[in-house]
Amino acid sequence: MIGDVWEWTSSEFIGYPGFKTGFEEYNDKWFTNQKVLRGGSFGTPKRSIRGSYRNFFRLDERWLFSGFRCTENN
Image 1 (tube, one colour):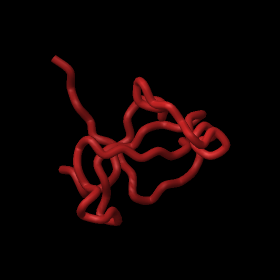
Image 2 (image 1 turned 180 degrees about the vertical axis):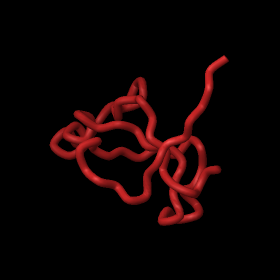
Image 3 (image 1 turned 30 degrees about the vertical axis):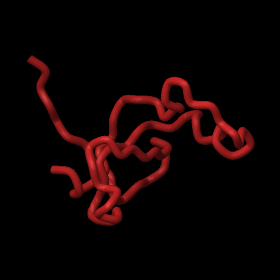
């Protein structure tokens, strides 16, 4: 299913554990009020489409290449 649309997650977009920024004026502004999108879409370069690939976007902005997957936890 990877590659149809980016899939929203409930995770906050923050640096991975141990991440140290070298560009606070650039990197740190992206680590607030963003949710993680995973996978990739039909508009993503093929080399970047994989389950571990993450992107980010603000929930209050429209993003045409995103969707969600319904799952059931048993």
